[in-house]
Length: 257
Figure (cartoon, rainbow, N blue to C red):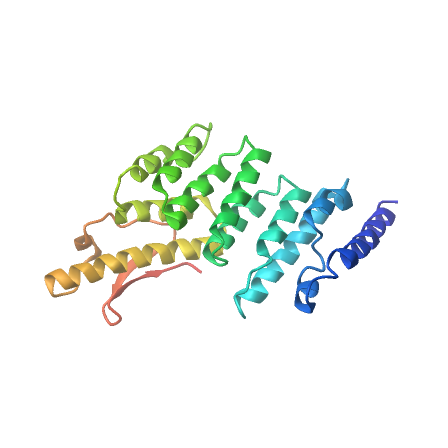
């Protein structure tokens, strides 16, 4: 009988969406065909939360990939993630990875913060969500006080990231110091296995080190002989080696992917 209920849910979703999206332009109807309004999400998925969440997550990744390599128009990304996490409030990548995509690619930092706060409310026992929220505040809103607050909150959880309190202390420093940015990117790299997120972490560190290299060259009239001359601790990341590209006059990284 389970498959009969699945078919019934699909039929219900079709008619709900037919009415719900009549006001949208053609592109909007096509993009949101599989994504009901939030108020319908729990109703249509009742009893089949995992099934629907997996389905919506797959469509979310397809939507993101399509626009990442074309027009980079992610206007419906937050809506999709909101629906996903309404259907299944335990779908943690929907909050953490979703917030990263909203912040980094869609440039919708406030929506990323809203999504993470929703996740904290629904999953108060998980330290990973406030940890990512601290990361978003440090790197995207530049609100270091809020970043410190969420890193301190992370540190209070049992078995959480062991250096969260150190990150919080770094964030309380008034000025933005490059070593703090490197530490934040490095910490996120260590805590995720998602390849895309790791790529962006490495890119973030490359940019900071390249900026320091340019400052060194301007002051000394030459490129540094080694990265050690830049005056910051070069992070050790699994499978990654940073080096100076003297031809392009920037810091790059050898990566395992």
